[in-house]
Image (cartoon, rainbow, N blue to C red; front, side, top):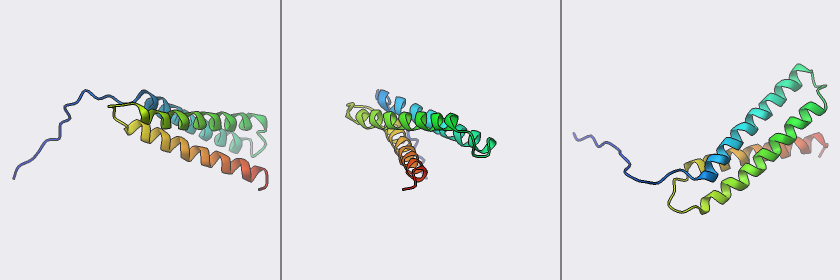
Length: 106
């Protein structure tokens, strides 16, 4: 039985926008988790502090999604980080919008 080793001989690199998008998505996720932790510690009375964390997570995920989608235009690159960053930021963006709408009573 022959075993084939999978080697990639390529000079391609990940997209810069994908890397930035993934980093922004991870930071947005950590900011969101920290905001939830602070809200639980304050028993729901954290106020402006948690709102600030939510706005930061929302803006980071929005910018990360835009940068991630734009990064697909880069030629001759690996798009794995573009896909991961765009997906992570998109999911966080939908989550943040749904939380904002629930907070407004819609």
